Image (cartoon, rainbow, N blue to C red):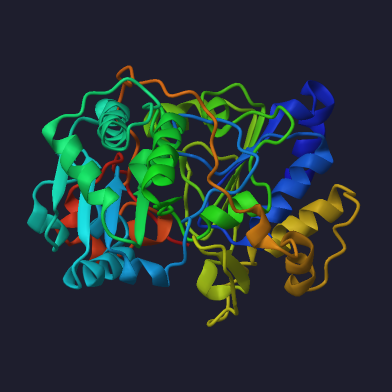
Length: 416
């Protein structure tokens, strides 16, 4: 059904009418095969950046900018656009260890992400709490304070306020430093401006610059090219509607997209919507559901935020007639007569998907011009127990206080 449907859509509307929206919680092997399948059909419409508001092309893979272990030894840190304790609890623990050893923690974020210093379970030296639209200006102010201190030109118009000077003074001290951009900074309407300013501040203070990373495989999705390369539609464009056939890999637009309800409605207008999920997901918009295994029931690989590939085996047998997504995509490719899809084992897929030197691809360099004008709207940022399809369906997690404050719309959940 799916193979014939994709053939008909391609014949009637062209390959550009087909697209894939993939969750960055999918494995490297799954994301690689999804991209290879789209491109073999002649479409470059694949993207994992479901909550992003800006889709600036990047020639490199965005990452943490340093090793995970080094976070425990920082002396100065600036966190931008994150509820660190809830968004990245393991990273928060490392930074908490650093703070106990004398590190100064500085914050640029919103009130919604930073209710009080004790909400992070660590003392915060300096906090610039502003609406998300003003974060670029906040970083520009810090840059202006550093420029005044060092006698250099600032990269953008800014005012060295008392808070900006305090953050600047902190970052100019110490030896081991990092500027860490959170989920809301990555999803920001002016994410490139934030990164450009962070890079300038990092260069002036000797701090590394990087992204904390939203999902288990945010870096891996970039490494295997699960985003448009040659003029294909971005996730934002696909979620706005217009595609004739949509493949949804481990994702639910109503929950995972920046504008969930509108995105789901737009996707539902396609002639054919194919969902690959372990759950009864997207039932109101899908024409077919292909049941696939969650990560616990299949082998796979994630590439973590420091660029380290971590492979694993399934620990329990797949439920019923469920199949691992990589096998479903592999068979679908064979049925569509895609060359190079004759994989017999996941090791073969992995060898094809992951380059020999992942580290060479990692870079947070950005040459975008800084725009300090206020950004419209709020960055999409899911609460800790609304982030993916597994935690959304965990009854124990949904009984917690954190689950009662979702950043995405609620919808009844069902499991296969």
